[in-house]
Amino acid sequence: MKLPKWLLLSIAVPILWGLWGALTEIPEKWLHPSFPPTLGYVVWSLTMIPVALIVLYRMNWKLTHTRRAIIYGCAVGFSGAAGQLLLFSVLQQGPAYLIFPIVCLSPAVTILLSFALLRERTYPLALTGILLSLPAILLVSLQEPTNSPVHGSFWLLGAIAIFFMWGLQAYYMKSSANALSAEELFIYMTATGLALSPIALFMGPGFHSGMGTGFGLTYLIQSLNAVGCLLFVYAVRYGKAIVVVPMVNGMFPLVTIVVSLLLYKELPSKFNLAGMVLALVAVLFMAFDEVRHSPDEAK
Image (tube, rainbow, N blue to C red; front, side, top):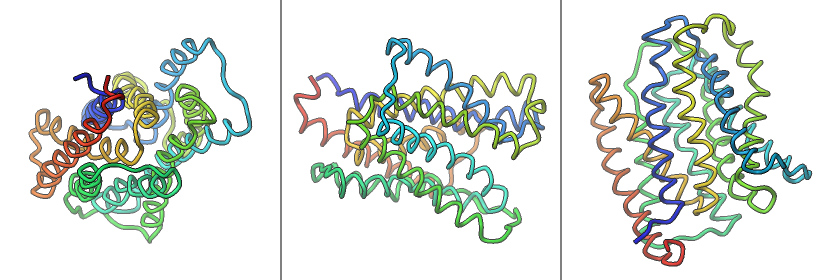
């Protein structure tokens, strides 16, 4: 049986993002210690350009300029990019082992909005997988406590803001289907990401500090994220947001943990291991139930 497009994409995206997650700290920690994290955002926004140009070429360089399309495009782009920038700031003020579990549960927002506003529904086994995916995402994102200082309470408010922004972003990807195509949505995401790059440069020590090996390698690594972003938009459009979003967010940390284990010999914690098992079960439940009830889509 031929697998549906949304499922193939929902597998490809976590692989790309999982590799990106495992490799993204190499330029900063190994090859170029002075490479600032905020510069990683700038490089990521630049990697979106060649992907966007390929997409535009396939669209014959035509882009929808309606008011509704622009609003949706900016909503998706700014919610994702602004959340990424805010993450850099909160990680400097609060503990990562508390911030990431909050942020990574953003699919809960997407699930609730898609269920209530888009009237998306699924089947009992898939619904069980969705419910299992949320604790799975929490467990795989847990990190060991550190002794890093905590500055005020802004980091908590920031983490909650990112939680809502990224949840809204995935919802808008789906709800904007009648306003603009997946390709056009990616173009707007690229434009908004680039628009926030000057802020990222202002937050860090500057573009010149990352030149050299660190910059080149970061570009290659961030390209995995950029391609993954485009495929994620397609996955959400082809499938149900309440299934695709928790599936992708549950699998990509799992891939990151496995790759990190192979590259750095870093053993996952017992919580991470439990989350990995739970994530696999959740993904199997969602994929199996959706595919078996969608014979026409799988042809």
